[in-house]
Length: 213
Image 1: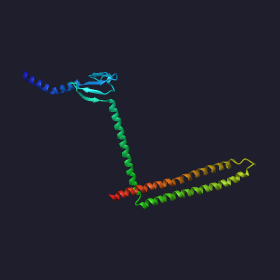
Image 2: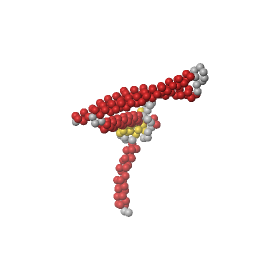
Image 3: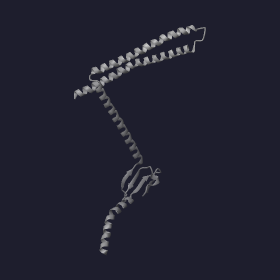
Image 4: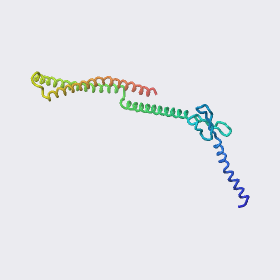
């Protein structure tokens, strides 16, 4: 190869490597700077140990700040962003659930009268359940009366049979259970009315809103 060719090759190589050399110089020229916890200012081509976890400045070769880094601020921003994202997801879930309920509500009732009819059926079912409980309570009380007479037979004479004693205790426990169930069913009346009051309110809100459009 001639000297001229070698010269051209060298120039070409220099031309290709020049941009990389400039970038390398820029990178190498960056300097870290921070104010330590001891209020002193620290510099370094690599991160000074005194600067770990503290706000930093990165300076170019001319001493101009080209970037600022605040580790604590970044953590707080990240936490704030995560909290905002979580709140957005929760709000979206609430909206989705409300839309699902509204759709189910409109599918359940064709008119305001349907809401009232559904309330009536629910209250009648509740009343029927209470009547059935009352019948069971009456049966238990009748059985208790018979057991009481049997117990009278043994008063002052002999110890009552274990089975009779167990039957008395069983009847008492069953009566208590049925009484508690009856109280629960009576309290459900308020819940039923509250449910259908809300259904009617929401139904009218949705249908009147649609009619206005």
